[in-house]
Image (cartoon, rainbow, N blue to C red):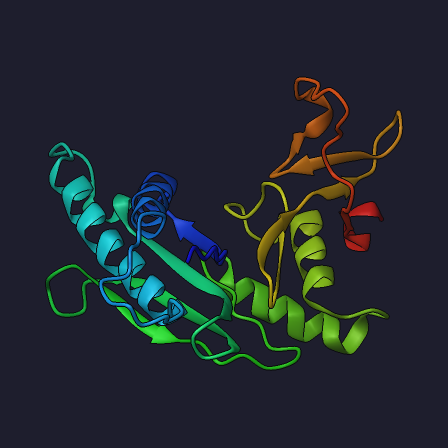
Length: 220
């Protein structure tokens, strides 16, 4: 029997370490083979623990190869692995966090609490995001996480927070990345991480993006 699962992965910090971790962990999970005849679904927690272990080893290896003028912390990253767990039949999310608290590098692991209207920011802009979200919850006519994100980017409240928005959606069928609908002088465009999909080579009989997300805060 063949099974296929998809889960979400988000990160902050070193892009090289985070994407390298994803590549190795994904390669491992794509080659899972049951060692018994028991038909058992894969647990999301086990997948998240794999990401933790791969990330821990990847960062240690990357930091060990740096030159004397470089800081090992430049290889650190934090991540989240989330989605619908086929083993427990519920949505779950786990965090892996770089730490030097014990004097030795390790990736800490924790399950995140999921609830309506609850969110888990990460990265250097976390404090500024939470402060702005609290302010907008009192003042803005349409408060919410996406409104706060749009205002944070528009106001440039923190110099190292910017770039492009990306939305991913989880349901019981798995995780999928949705294209973003962007305003444009020649009409709306679709993008993934800011890359205009109209720049892609043509697929005969197909188009990219039959279903997109519009973030109203970015259209104001």
